[in-house]
Length: 428
Image 1 (cartoon, rainbow, N blue to C red):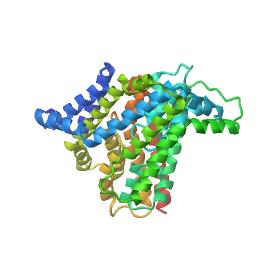
Image 2: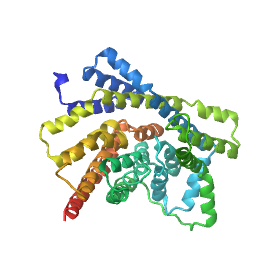
Image 3: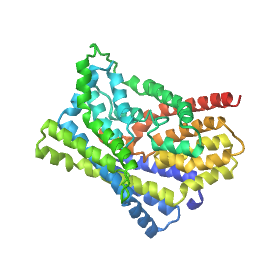
């Protein structure tokens, strides 16, 4: 009987299952591995095949690379924190900032310009330092860091999800960027209304000087090294033939190691402190969480649950507009990554719209699909940035979701409004 439930009902039950386990303070990696096993068994894989899938997906090359990257981010964060350089970054930014709310929003937004796995872990210590002395809850700090870290991906051309959408839709990059840019405004407005309004408002009473700007730029050199190495090496590799395949995350890893070296050198950090950063308990825990995420995501794909959800929506003759919104939202919720919801839902959406929609009107449907898919991704229990933020601030996952619901609904309504405006204008 349970096996015959619609796939959509199954994924909702699994989602609630993860939330319920976290409420009992069970380690998140245990929750994720348990959810992965539950999905495998529920989708009829059998115990042996389920265990095999969990092991294969959690220990795949991509999973291990991602775990290494996240560990290195955590090590860099520890070095920045222990050397008090993170405090100096926040202090120097405050000197050129308009106020504390502006600082809280801008620090994660600045890091958000850099597309990297678990990037919210970069900005989390900044938000923590910026909120020092206030009584902000762990859940609010998590929500602020998470929300403002993700304001750019709707249109910022460095993100893989947007690039894939442009490719699948076969449109000019500037067209999709221009059409989806207003989604970013909805995120900013909703974050200000529902999240930043819960922070005490303190305006800056100083006028920024050139010296303040120089101090800030000097303190953020570690982040500049990461960005420069990522894109600089990427540019070089594109034009130099190599006898081997260059690993996807290697640029990022090299950049992180260079940044760590800079922090150690410029702050004259002792060996004991470096060892503490490398072997911190939080570091090991986070690595296990990454493996749990990859196991859960992998088993959802291998058991074809997403495909079943898509088939259910079509089988019951659900309106095309609803399918265009629902498929990316569900895919985003399940996969927790923009590349995932675009790659899994856009091909089907394009097929559904073929012959019905032509020309610029496709941009309206893409905006609808991307807006809903992105909000699904933001609410996903396997979204890496949500999990690392929640774990960093020791926040309650359900409590964080409670704070995110209102801005999410605001953005979804804003997305529908944009869709209606675009549909009307582009149909003329």
